[in-house]
Image (cartoon, rainbow, N blue to C red; front, side, top):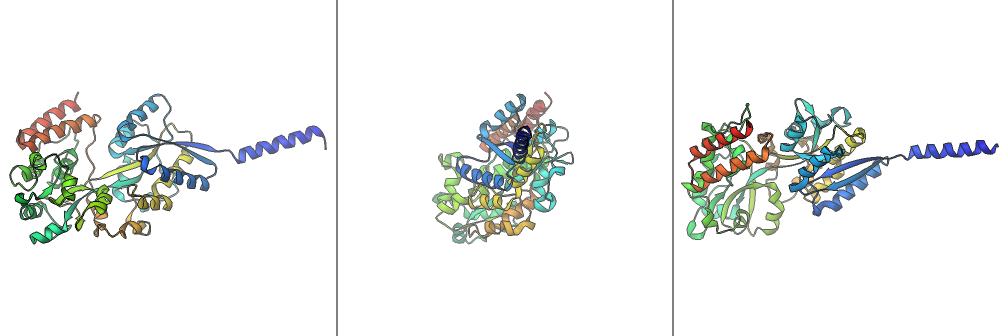
Length: 409
């Protein structure tokens, strides 16, 4: 064979082999992977790359406090990651700025049958799906069954209302023994949801509706537990002890907090406890916290990035890993019950179904361009009402005035 022809055949063969083994690198930026879950993430990446040998995942992480500053810097420098994580509040901002890639046409799964509707819809903007929910959490009513038994009070049910909370709280409270009926924070994340329970809410139309009769009723419900009913401890009565530690020491009959506390209470609570869907006022409304994986509009690797997004959101190995390592909860539809069964099978709390029942009433927080400042303003005014330095009416009037100035500046 002609030597020159032989050389060309060898070169052509090498080119073909090179093309066969060409790999696409997908950059991935995450804040939900803290130091406790690096090993799990790397194991998932290895599994994904094993299934997709033509794709390499190059990941980086940052704490939540610095994540968005770094992300904005990378976007400004034209070096945005292919795939990155957004919580709901920041998702709206990024979607409104046209920085995200629509994802529906890139998916090989059916999102409507795969994910819980509230979680999926949260990451749609103007009717366009820009991300898939990878995790969610919610807030429920935790209660100390031993304290309820000792007081002869019936356990909370998913049908409880505010009145039930107050009535039970009065029967559970015994300040001589340093026991109070309930602790529910008086802050933005409680108020926005409690306002909806009262039939109101913080709707943006076009400015944020804060000072309304329904919202005053909601704030009164929150602060009256401290100011007039005495079923929630004051700062002085807490003496610097956190609400979580007071619950664990048997000083609170009920506490409104997130499902992220399950592991702590399972390991540290020396009493029997359970959960229920949070009670409502005129209607039910529960927190919704969720994180999504999205693709930057500037990505040159959209198809490969979409494969990684789907793997993060719904692959059975990812679901199994998250549940076994308590690495937040996958946002899957209850139609995927076979994947969620290991979570529901965990003995404590017995009423784990309440976690998913809460999603039936999930409401998202209001989002404006100056979100951190908005939350700071509302928190300052709510705190004044809780401490009694302002009336409910004055606190919400001042909050409305200050937020109007913020939104219209």
